[in-house]
Length: 220
Image 1 (cartoon, rainbow, N blue to C red):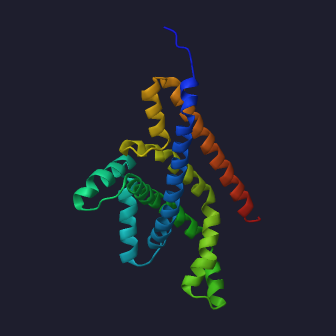
Image 2 (image 1 turned 30 degrees about the vertical axis):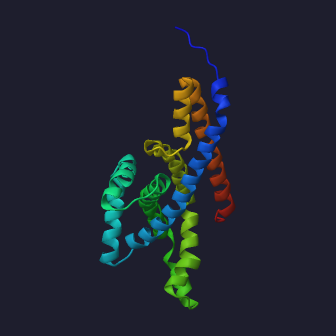
Image 3 (image 1 turned 90 degrees about the vertical axis):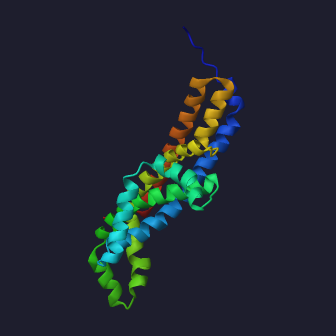
């Protein structure tokens, strides 16, 4: 049996793939922003000397990191309405991805916070800064420089994880590719094009993050 590649049917629907790709990027961007906020707050909880902050932060990280993200996606969309919490498909998925990424970023930020030399805090105290001012103006900027490579990897992983939104019919890239596949029966061509779009986008994101790392690199 021979199979002849024919991309014409896929090209005719290429705008749908681009729309799906744009939505995937939007989902990943919103999730990484919200995830960074969640992760940063949790990271300060993880390094806190107060048990009432450290224990809940550790429990959140442990529970989320040990639960498959697809389970979280399905729980958020199908189970929360049973508890009276109703969210749209996109809002539900972004919330889930933010909570999921927040748990991973909390550990990333925790490592970055530990790597900040204690002398930086002491220097801030010496010039009269409050604890909050020291965290905002000294510790967090230094921590972010320390974790940029890991932050870039998390962003790329989140972009790939947006494909799971197809499970609840969010029209991102994978969902649109599946729809074109069903309508045209060009299985191989459709998934080749979709895969190329994922690879090209991940490569661009990686190049962008490397450029940011070089720009913000600490001189040694």
